[in-house]
Length: 179
Image (cartoon, rainbow, N blue to C red; front, side, top):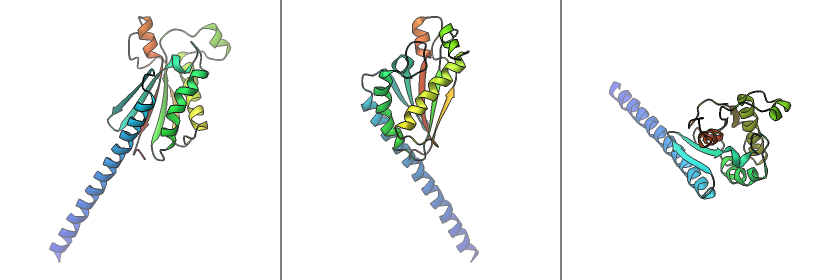
């Protein structure tokens, strides 16, 4: 009888491992499918899509979404974000995190008149506007969030115009089981 319990226990452990492996593979397949869909949608655009460990990250240069130094989505933004919305709205368990980043240039008088005092404020407004747009296009409000990152985490030097342009970006990251 004791031997039978041991075998049953081992079978249960093996079954749990098998199920966990299937979930992981299914998650990978879902994110891989989203990667393929988004790669096709954004061919030639100034959008970068990367698969990371357990994540899919879409990086969009700010000039595609916002007027220079602004935070309100412009007409070009609709074309860019509309390509993303169908893929994102298909997920039911995947968290979508929208992060806004800026360069280190001080906020100008025009933005200060609109209540934007810091780069963190500007990046937060930009991320919020992208999230609002994606929710209107069908992405679940319970799965999407916005984070302003300001000038933290630059991807290039802020000592050149090209570097500052690279730092002004929106990153949309898909995290989770991928379904």
